[in-house]
Image (cartoon, rainbow, N blue to C red; front, side, top):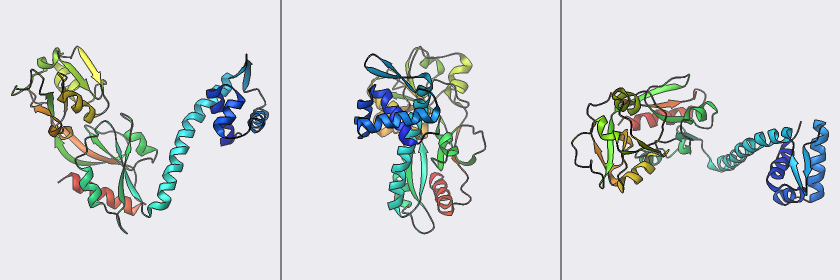
Length: 291
């Protein structure tokens, strides 16, 4: 088996193409890098590199190791940084995963209220790739996540409140003075969305899809704050949960006709039964969000 230093060498070899280049990246001597490479090959019993001209190319077996090394190195580096912070933090933190729904009017009051203490953890936010918030919970890289729409799976779901979908346009839009927007209003529009994959309970399945009114031009931005920023100064439009729209950013919300079914917001959390401070913090966050 290889240790982390061997994987780091293979990773840098794939980037530099030479032992000397990999050694420079790792701040070790060329002889130490060569010795490390030979040691890795002895442990496996087969070559990990082939010479192509003046450069070293990785074998297919080594490339597979590099794929794993790249993913593992990023996770380990992040964990080391977290460990350094946690060693000085003095108190645990409730880790809240935020994905595309990154308009956070609740965050400042939560941080102020979550001063931490002997019974309640503080609060921190971790960024989740689109659709991956639940995976962060399953991997214990986050404790709770906000979720809109139906929920599935083994994670604990705590209902918060009902919301509704609204049309979102900017001042330059010809739709800005409309009292209501129908599916046909979006058929020829420049439409921006955080996901092009239809989701149960959202506009593709409850508003546009049933009448076959799909925008001809669609742009994906995996951030509702970025969507609002674009819409505010252009003819782009969208349909978003009302809670996720900051009208102070220069956008206008318009009711949809006919009104789609409400969107249920919930807080999804991993098992916190043996973590009293984080569990208390999750309870506190639920109470704050329900206000």
